[in-house]
Image 1: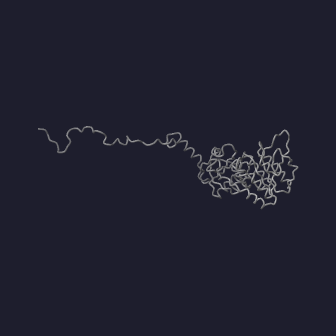
Image 2 (image 1 turned 90 degrees about the vertical axis):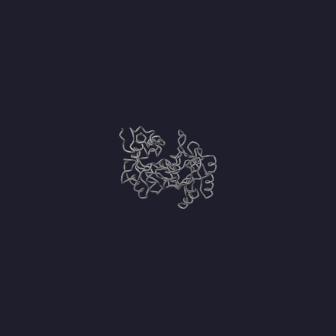
Image 3 (image 1 turned 180 degrees about the horizontal axis):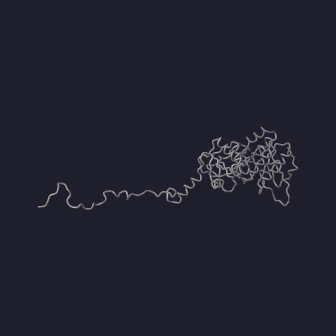
Length: 319
């Protein structure tokens, strides 16, 4: 007689289960989209991103957290060069960020720029020289410092003349016709400041504006010289004539030489044309007098910035 086991006990060896009972369900599920390369720790893009973060990290206790800047961010411009930056900060030009290169030589201008930025609450960031090269486009000598500023604020041409008349009964203004090189504009702004002129008028079309490159070339003079933007330069010329200004155009084909022209007792608007084309036809017709600068016959023409400097010096010397 077979021995009976305890009631309810399983009889014989337990066989294999059919299926997994749901234990393998997770293994069959998808893992979602593939992460970006910079989010995968084993990928070289991840290591490169981490290295970039370390290079832009500011020194402890000296600089505010860094933000990567560009040459134009929402219309903003980047000024570079020690003179341009410190002059802009002294003139309290609105600015959003100051960038200083790592291990930059700390001269008086750099120290003053950092102090002025800190006093005004402008973030100061330490970045690599390569980063400032990228901000400035790599085509300027930034001297290890750059300032990000909002777009330049132009004044109205009539407001510019009002300001000039309030300072002197013989104002001296400069208008540019067809100047497209920002370095020429910067040089002219610098000459305007050096020889005591009161401001500049730029046409809205077919002309360069006050860009970062113009700021750089002006060596900070753009912070002191007002610039007006004219929707129609010929209308501004006529309005200035109506208000008593004598309009002089500089052109190689002028019928009077600059040294022979008496400019002592007149409120003046001097118009400078481009080096290649000179003054446009309508502008030349609206001038009261077109004068030329005597040069050697071996030289075809003068750069617009140099021509403006010569004319402004001649006027300043005779006043």
